[in-house]
Image (cartoon, rainbow, N blue to C red; front, top):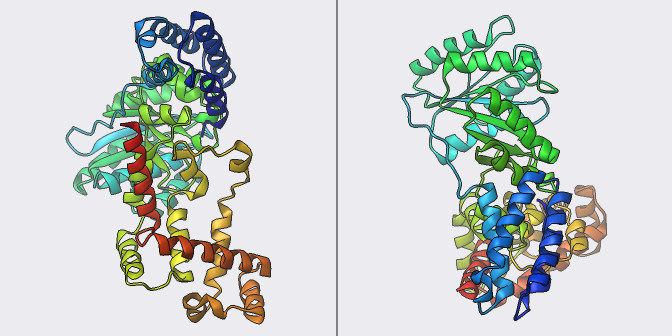
Amino acid sequence: MFDNLTDRLSGALKKLKGQGRLTEANIQETLREVRLALLEADVALPVVTEFIKQVTGRALGKEVSASLSPGQALIKIVQTELVNVMGAANEELNLRTQPPAVILMAGLQGAGKTTTVAKLGRHLKEKKKKKVGVVSVDVYRPAAIKQLQTLADDNGLKFFESDISEKPADIVHRVLDAAKRQFIDVLIVDTAGRLHVDDEMMSEIKELHAAIKPIETLFVVDSMTGQDAANTAKAFHDALPLTGVILTKADGDARGGAALSIRHITGKPIKFIGVGEKSDALEPFHPDRVASRILGMGDMLSLIEDIEQKTDKKKAEQLAKKLQKGKSFDLEDLREQLVQMQNLGGISAMMDKMPGMGIPKEVKEKVNDKDLARQIAVINSMTKQERRFPELIKGSRKERIAKGCGQNVEAVNRILKQHQMMEKMMRKFSKANLPNMIRGMSGQMRGIRH
């Protein structure tokens, strides 16, 4: 996420880290590079101009000159101003109203609006323990209604029927009555999208908004469209009283222009960010954490939250007890670690959130999270006995395993070698399962910071 911007900013600021004294000349030179990095990231010009102005004012003041490590002080200023540009803190949804709380979702076609409705519904159901209903008022595309029904069924959300013969406002009024009778806490309304902003679209959604008076009106926008995302959000905000923005496809956005432009241009907070295709790949937007990731400092808080929510603590404890008793780390244990890593979004997602990794860009690009699925498939092709006693796996067994998972013998050999390396490490650290290793790393990093 935002890799190009991270590389450029980290490169510009790295030169200052070890310097005992900063001058106006080298500060200006560094900020010139920062300015270019932001413009290349497709950050809107007014945002860049204001950002550089704020950083320059603080950098040339006593805040940096009086510091024992001026280079670090300047980096801290850049980080603080990045947070200010994106919003001081995460702003949660306002659901304080007589149920059902209505959330109106707006956005252009192709931004991932319908998928985001399902993701948001799942988030509210699992994290906020809400009973969530969804309805589509896209009367132009029957396929959109069917898509939402499928997603709702997959995520355990209540789907309310709608028909293309009805008017959007009539659909919502009918569904609202049904939602009240069924004690729905939150009703998310998916609206029609267009290929571009047009008068007809704006007129329809303004009429719908006036009719149902939602407590939240969220604009869903594709992160990869850069500052165009901010400009489109501004057009919607001029027509509707938006309460927030959801950025989608941020995992594929190497630039970050939208994330850094939207708050300044619309005055509205980014409330959520989409970081993948899976239905749980929607995260609350924390400006401080995103700023840390942009500056290559990682995001351990989000990684720890992922571990707490997405890893099986019971299985992790069982493995720790097993190793403490002197039992060996077998292939079934390795499989469990790979599955947990997969649940955390894969190796690339974890690397993105780990600070100070120092991993070159070319190495990151070689990481393929599909390899996790292939490795798990190799172990799945083994018998229970082979998983418990890897030393049994020789010539003909290797060929059978390779054939069973549709891969070659080299893939089986790689898993066996990987297991040997992991087993050696586990012998040294009896509690070295994936969650404990990452928690330990985060504890060490907190100690270094303080």
